[in-house]
Image (cartoon, rainbow, N blue to C red; front, side):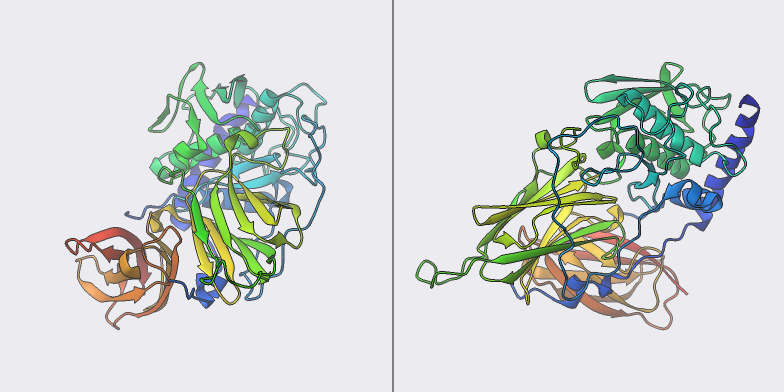
Length: 503
């Protein structure tokens, strides 16, 4: 094994370097989604982290031997059908199962996280039975290791192997002298000590180093109950190029999103004639979801009112006490909770395991339904209300460079567009007015305008959509800016900058 270390490091370094120049991700345009098709009738500079392309380059070379990638769902249909199927949730899980096959009523913790492009958090991949071996453990141990320490170590070893030129290296090679030498757990914090070859990690440059840090933190904290991880190298703070990991890190520390406030949104949908209205018929609800179809990095959850009257809803963060533990096997690090007045037609549990959405649980009691979304991390979320039919739309995440507290841009995506494109997103701005402009490198305005969203200043977001036509002379590297004007002095507020390349 020692003789292979320089070769593996060299392969990884070259792959990461090449990826920075070649990253490109295909995705479904936002304008194909439901929120773009129907409007409600109720009233930072860009930077790339392209290391996921390194995983794409390497995983493509290795083929399906390494990862079983889940299918990406398509656009949200105009008339959605419920996606959550009823299942029975066991009272408890048996930790340390020897099988690498995910349990039907538990999220799949046999996963590693690989870095994503352009600042998005890492996405998870399932480890098949080959990479699920307890790398570095006693001979003959396969499947899921029986201790939390060995499970963390096994996931990290599997991640490192996937980035170490395994196309020509036996999968059962002992890598314990190169990768995690020890894992210790104290409360919710794991300490992972590495013994690395001379020269340390082969990553060079801020993008590759930050991407690798994210991969390590997310993969190590996939263990239930572990919220933070401290990485050391032979007992000292670990360093990846210029990044020094000298304190415990959580997923929130490296996700790329700004801190998320603990917001709760409640809206009353009662009819104006209440309480003299005729007795309303109970609402019948259905739900569906999508991941990466609305926009890059967005998980969308929709509750639709199929019949009857609904009176209110509340959306907020679920209690952390009920999440992230082996006794509740379908939970993850964080959760959102949606309460709606009405009866879900197919209550139950569905395991999703598509980053960032891991599972959906729905329970109806006393005429109200509670939905819980188990999530990989604590990323920002937005709520919109659409009509015809009535729908509550909860969008989680998105590109950190194209969302802030009042504006979210879903289309066009950063990096490219034609001279004609559709600007689509959500906003909650003063008087529902959202302004936009396209500027060139000399800060000259090539096109500009305003659009009115379906809602203004509100806890619930409004939708907007506008067609943009750039002049024939527009070309090269441009910037789309979306913002709103301060009612006090007209200054630009909450500017979102989307880099475009027009050829």
